[in-house]
Image (cartoon, rainbow, N blue to C red; front, side, top):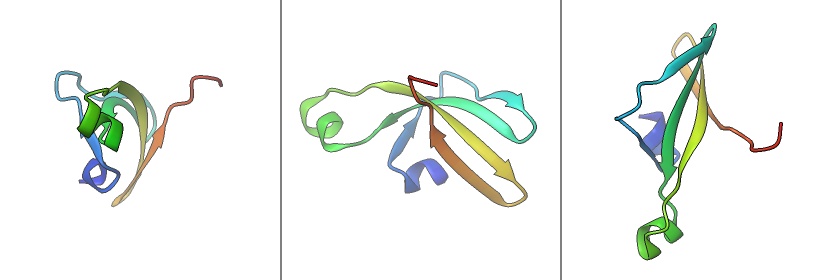
Length: 64
């Protein structure tokens, strides 16, 4: 549901990976105008931070 709120299409072919306590890594495509109209869609890495009933999605940066 959180992916829908942020206009992300979750990649169901890759299972989320637990990388720490309450932190999951997953892959998704941002459904922006470039993707919808021109077909230029990229699968990118995201993190989901969970805590209780809350889920926060953060896009992974290329430069860390």
